[in-house]
Image (cartoon, rainbow, N blue to C red; front, side, top):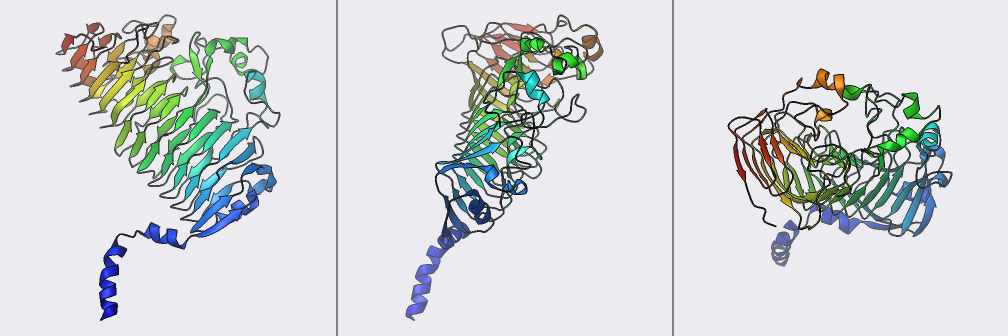
Length: 484
């Protein structure tokens, strides 16, 4: 009788104990003092692994054993006060590879270093000609891979270096059909379900994405993290005059795409990194909270995710191709950014719909280039653009917010709807071969940036403090006073 009563009392309590809690109860404490012990420990599961604080170098391991494969599950891997050096040219694969599930990597500073001691590339010509220990790239691309489910990467600082070509933005290609060959190096690839990145810092000094999602990625949460790439003035490429330097090899002209044959553009910025947070053709959802992305190609670029996309309390600064790009129904909530080196807002797909955008525009008096502020198309969006409480000049150019247009992205400039100066035959060949329609979109623009409602726009509602040019049909427009 007593045992029956005890069972009845205990059973409700057990209902509130998760399987993960049970695993936690069974975890054993493991202490490791070198990389070989760490590499061996993460093959097993249900452990609290604590590494001895100190500085380590991956070349402590044999050449073919320099990828730490975390195939065990339900581990906590504590690397607080641990620094691991990964010399460029000495690793063939990912630094950390999480194939197990429900693991937590906590802490750790991981740095790609150049074997000659260099920390910053200044001579891009010489750099790109050293394919062995500098412009090396990495097999599979990413320093950290997460293919398992329910893993957390927390409190990590990762510095990424070593890729080819480096220093020229997208000029020589970013995928198949490139002009020079590619050896990218990325930071963190997620392909599993329910993975989290929290309170991490990424210093990205290589051509490749920082955090990106592919394959089956779903329920990804990225929060409280800082991502910083690098940019370079395009004018500097004209200083590369040695025969082996890439700009000279291509006669200082653009080698690919709609810009092929045109001179390398002057007075713009080249991104030295790809996208800060990027989703490819994934089936699932992505949530980004309280993150900051600086000086990348694209900032937060999630237009290819098929699930729910929500970005909140995040900031994108000084990105080159675009700041934010969302999918159908994607949301920007209390986000910020500037358009210093490229558009802050861009919509990739012609039929993208029903985005909700709440965006505060930050000042960019250092801006360069002839890019627009935003390129808007699709239907059913609700967009609010607010100006930050800033008394100075928001930009040195009043860049247009273009709504519904007939031009390839490369030709969408401050000259719109006119022909950009110097684009000549390229513009005539490619202008108008795509129709980027905009309809039933509501925009409230509280900034001084002007709105150009292009000839592919109809049935939109535009309220704007900045000037409005209406080239479309059946659009409702209203000039407003700014709140601040």
